[in-house]
Amino acid sequence: MNTDNFTIWQRRECGPFCRVRHTHTASPANRACVGAEAAVPLSMSTAHAGGENLGPVMATVVAVLEQGPREREPHVNVSLPTEVESLTLDEAERLSSVLARLVHEGREAAKEVDWR
Image (tube, rainbow, N blue to C red; front, side, top):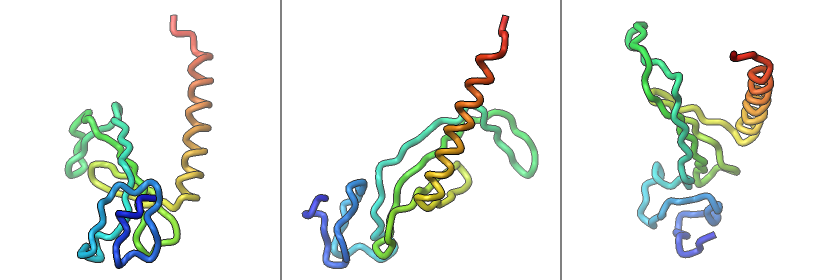
C-alpha cells in the first residue's frame, strides 16, 4: 500500500490494485479505489440500432476492480459499449470458472473437427 496516497476521509488504506491518486477534497462520488483496466476486443460483435442489425462492429469488453470507501471488498465492473455490470468477487470467480470450462470444451470440440 502506498501510504502517501492516504487521505483524511479514508477509513483504511487502499488495496494494492488502486491506481487513483486520492485527494483530501475529493467529493464522496469520487472516493472509490479503481484498478487498472483490462480490455478485450470482441471480433464477433454486432451493432444494433432500434432493433435493426447494423452488422459487425469492433466492440471491447473492459473489466476493472473498484471499491467504494465503505465497501468491504472490491467488485468487478464489466463494461460493454452500452452497459456496465458489477459483479461481486464470488460472482466474477464463478463466471471465470464457467468461461474457462466453456473454452476448454470448445477447444476440445474443435480438435475433433476434420477441417480438410
